[in-house]
Length: 119
Image 1 (cartoon, rainbow, N blue to C red):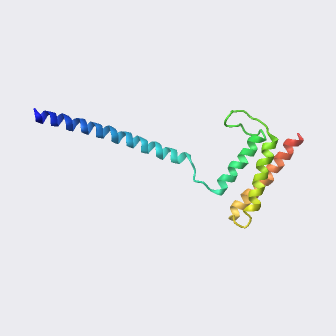
Image 2: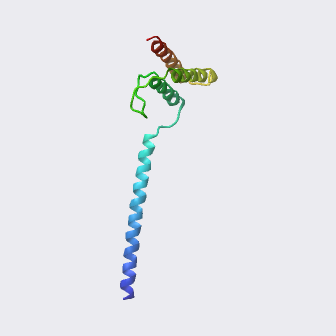
Image 3: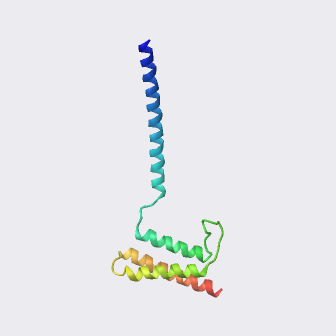
């Protein structure tokens, strides 16, 4: 009988180890999937996010929290001003592509803001 008990114990241990391995494999897969959803931080992505926030504040894009288009000109102006501060404070420290992207965003967003205020 001791041999049967040992065999049962070994089988239980193997089953528990198999379940734990499956759980860890699943957790690892979920972590890998989450990693794909979160992009690597960089300056271009950061200013793109701010530009998107301006478009949301101008009511051109839906607010992802409410699912509605909502206009808030003070928020739009604040974020545009923040982009302008970033341009000034990073002058000479950006790659040409980053500088051009920031300048392009500022030009476009300022025009959109003026149009929104006027009409």
